[in-house]
Length: 496
Picture 1 (cartoon, rainbow, N blue to C red):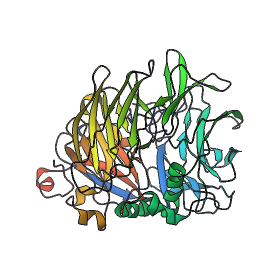
Picture 2 (cartoon, one colour):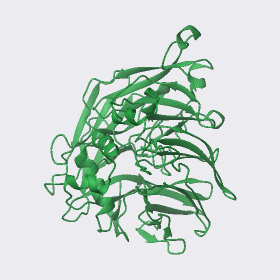
Picture 3 (tube, rainbow, N blue to C red):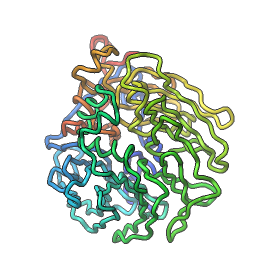
Picture 4 (cartoon, rainbow, N blue to C red):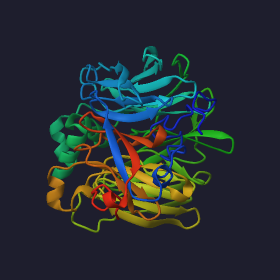
């Protein structure tokens, strides 16, 4: 049984201390069970409970103690009460214990975008929203320390953070020029895609991201903070605008920070007092003409893995050797095979990586595909399977290596894959898939019109999962066995 509590490691000892479980952003939640381990080898159903409070635009859920669920969320107005927050929820009753608002009211038009909440190895809670970093008391949510991070007159958002092996915190920002909402259709000319993203994220929020990606020329800034009082250890102006989140990796006794820019992947070595650009390894060009940057890096064996968007062409998976950056493999796993799509490619959420099985799970929202791709350091990528999927979420990996499963929100399983279906009213549910075959093993009922933008279905204790919906509902899902008589007629039962 997992010994829950503070740790000398960067993260709290719990099921889901961090948005992607670990500091290498694998999305592989090590202390979870497969469906079979929870409910046996028969058919499974998914029970649900909904938390009674409203959590407008939730982003990531996390666990701490066995009876604690943390939730970070944000709204369209960064400087108002409908801006950011961290809430503590009782895992047994789903009642809210406390909620701490997070504000960023400068400049007046400050762009709102999700940050993150994390249970640190020292026992405290840390969160970022806009250009404000917070240390919170887990007992009552009191702000124990707050740090305003660097930004220019446009306003900046620090999109998440990672924890270094010594417990310090590393984060970086995205700048966005003041951008009229009317430019979005011109920047991304897919009407159905705009409708989907407008409903999922809010057109003002997505407009900030679009304008950062396509109009911003201001470089990003990386900041390292000490966890005790959030003192700034170092500030590094990066070589270019960078939309991707930071990822920490270690090898050969050194600690590195990987940041995907556009068009280059950069690697910095953390040296305690700050960082130095590793010019012996990169920067590594990885974004091709007509593509956009990756959301974040992760790893398989001795390779860093990145999944690019493709604004005008198919997106690609990239693998770059961590010791020799000239060794690189690339594949376009979802080259378009059907007219039913939202456009060439849009990868809002980062790939998941299973280092035990050398498999990457990739999801491309606009090409309507989810798939598993095996990686070999000698021969490169091989697509194992792919399936129609409509999702803007990260995928979660759970269970032991030989029973590994994918948990991910999906909308297309509620109806046939047609152009009419895409333009109609969509509803989201969570599905469990076998990693090796893509077979659907279980499914929830319809939960919401959409998931919250870019969320991950976070595992909890006792086989529970937490789904943040775009409407502001937090739903707990739990796996239960069903008898053959029930499973034969239950539309949420296991089927291919």
